[in-house]
Length: 134
Image 1 (spheres, rainbow, N blue to C red):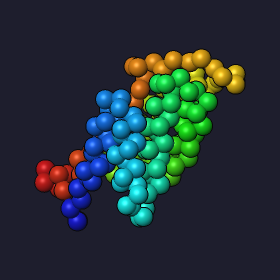
Image 2: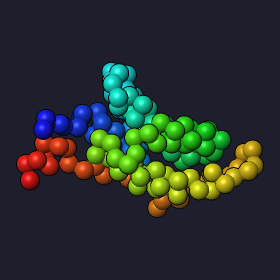
Image 3: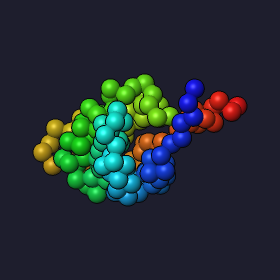
Image 4: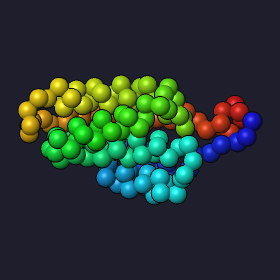
Protein backbone atom coordinates (compact mmCIF):
# COMPACT_ATOMS: atom_id res chain seq x y z
CA UNK A 1 0.00 0.00 0.00
CA UNK A 2 1.25 3.44 -0.92
CA UNK A 3 1.96 5.89 1.88
CA UNK A 4 -0.48 8.82 1.90
CA UNK A 5 -0.05 12.02 3.87
CA UNK A 6 -2.59 14.81 4.24
CA UNK A 7 -1.85 18.00 2.33
CA UNK A 8 -0.67 20.82 4.66
CA UNK A 9 -3.39 23.19 3.33
CA UNK A 10 -6.04 20.55 4.12
CA UNK A 11 -4.74 20.34 7.69
CA UNK A 12 -4.42 24.13 7.99
CA UNK A 13 -8.05 24.54 6.92
CA UNK A 14 -9.15 21.97 9.48
CA UNK A 15 -7.25 23.70 12.28
CA UNK A 16 -8.84 27.03 11.35
CA UNK A 17 -12.29 25.46 11.02
CA UNK A 18 -12.01 23.89 14.47
CA UNK A 19 -11.35 27.27 16.10
CA UNK A 20 -14.30 28.81 14.23
CA UNK A 21 -12.11 30.84 11.85
CA UNK A 22 -14.40 29.88 8.99
CA UNK A 23 -13.39 32.56 6.51
CA UNK A 24 -9.72 31.70 6.98
CA UNK A 25 -10.46 27.95 6.68
CA UNK A 26 -12.25 28.67 3.42
CA UNK A 27 -9.16 30.58 2.20
CA UNK A 28 -6.79 27.70 3.05
CA UNK A 29 -9.00 25.11 1.34
CA UNK A 30 -9.54 27.36 -1.66
CA UNK A 31 -5.80 27.40 -2.32
CA UNK A 32 -5.86 23.60 -2.29
CA UNK A 33 -8.99 23.48 -4.49
CA UNK A 34 -7.37 25.78 -7.08
CA UNK A 35 -4.44 23.41 -7.57
CA UNK A 36 -6.30 20.08 -7.42
CA UNK A 37 -8.03 18.84 -10.55
CA UNK A 38 -8.35 15.25 -9.37
CA UNK A 39 -11.13 13.35 -7.62
CA UNK A 40 -10.82 15.40 -4.41
CA UNK A 41 -11.65 18.72 -6.11
CA UNK A 42 -15.40 18.66 -5.39
CA UNK A 43 -14.70 17.37 -1.86
CA UNK A 44 -12.61 20.48 -1.19
CA UNK A 45 -15.34 22.62 -2.72
CA UNK A 46 -17.81 21.05 -0.28
CA UNK A 47 -15.55 21.87 2.68
CA UNK A 48 -15.10 25.42 1.41
CA UNK A 49 -18.86 25.83 1.24
CA UNK A 50 -19.34 24.28 4.70
CA UNK A 51 -16.96 26.90 6.11
CA UNK A 52 -18.65 29.71 4.16
CA UNK A 53 -22.11 28.60 5.33
CA UNK A 54 -20.96 28.71 8.96
CA UNK A 55 -19.31 32.10 8.37
CA UNK A 56 -22.60 33.47 7.00
CA UNK A 57 -24.62 31.86 9.81
CA UNK A 58 -22.34 33.38 12.46
CA UNK A 59 -22.70 36.82 10.84
CA UNK A 60 -26.49 36.62 10.68
CA UNK A 61 -26.75 36.15 6.91
CA UNK A 62 -29.25 33.32 7.23
CA UNK A 63 -30.39 33.31 3.59
CA UNK A 64 -26.79 33.04 2.40
CA UNK A 65 -25.99 30.43 5.04
CA UNK A 66 -28.91 28.25 3.99
CA UNK A 67 -28.11 28.43 0.29
CA UNK A 68 -24.41 27.62 0.75
CA UNK A 69 -25.20 24.90 3.34
CA UNK A 70 -27.26 22.98 0.78
CA UNK A 71 -24.52 23.44 -1.84
CA UNK A 72 -21.96 22.06 0.60
CA UNK A 73 -24.09 18.98 1.27
CA UNK A 74 -24.48 18.41 -2.45
CA UNK A 75 -20.72 18.42 -2.99
CA UNK A 76 -19.90 16.24 0.05
CA UNK A 77 -22.65 13.60 -0.25
CA UNK A 78 -20.92 11.56 -3.00
CA UNK A 79 -17.83 11.16 -0.79
CA UNK A 80 -19.73 9.45 2.04
CA UNK A 81 -19.17 7.62 4.27
CA UNK A 82 -15.50 8.63 4.63
CA UNK A 83 -13.00 10.54 2.53
CA UNK A 84 -9.45 11.78 3.20
CA UNK A 85 -9.76 10.69 6.82
CA UNK A 86 -13.00 12.63 7.41
CA UNK A 87 -16.07 10.78 8.69
CA UNK A 88 -18.55 12.50 6.39
CA UNK A 89 -21.56 10.69 7.85
CA UNK A 90 -20.75 12.24 11.23
CA UNK A 91 -19.77 15.63 9.82
CA UNK A 92 -22.91 16.01 7.67
CA UNK A 93 -25.12 14.89 10.57
CA UNK A 94 -23.48 17.49 12.83
CA UNK A 95 -23.88 20.19 10.15
CA UNK A 96 -27.57 19.28 9.81
CA UNK A 97 -28.01 19.60 13.58
CA UNK A 98 -26.22 22.96 13.60
CA UNK A 99 -28.36 24.23 10.71
CA UNK A 100 -31.63 22.72 11.98
CA UNK A 101 -33.36 26.05 12.66
CA UNK A 102 -32.00 27.51 9.42
CA UNK A 103 -33.31 24.57 7.38
CA UNK A 104 -36.71 24.78 9.07
CA UNK A 105 -37.06 28.56 8.69
CA UNK A 106 -39.78 29.68 6.33
CA UNK A 107 -39.43 33.45 6.69
CA UNK A 108 -37.56 35.35 4.00
CA UNK A 109 -35.19 37.02 6.49
CA UNK A 110 -35.21 34.89 9.66
CA UNK A 111 -33.36 36.02 12.77
CA UNK A 112 -31.55 32.91 13.98
CA UNK A 113 -28.41 32.78 16.09
CA UNK A 114 -25.91 29.99 15.78
CA UNK A 115 -25.68 27.73 18.85
CA UNK A 116 -21.95 27.40 19.53
CA UNK A 117 -22.24 23.91 21.05
CA UNK A 118 -23.68 22.56 17.79
CA UNK A 119 -20.85 23.76 15.53
CA UNK A 120 -19.07 20.69 14.15
CA UNK A 121 -15.37 20.02 14.52
CA UNK A 122 -13.28 17.98 12.13
CA UNK A 123 -11.14 15.16 13.50
CA UNK A 124 -9.31 13.03 10.96
CA UNK A 125 -8.26 9.44 11.03
CA UNK A 126 -4.49 9.07 10.75
CA UNK A 127 -3.20 9.02 7.16
CA UNK A 128 -2.53 5.60 5.62
CA UNK A 129 1.21 5.75 6.41
CA UNK A 130 0.52 6.26 10.12
CA UNK A 131 -2.10 3.50 10.13
CA UNK A 132 0.27 0.97 8.55
CA UNK A 133 3.03 1.88 11.04
CA UNK A 134 0.86 0.83 13.99
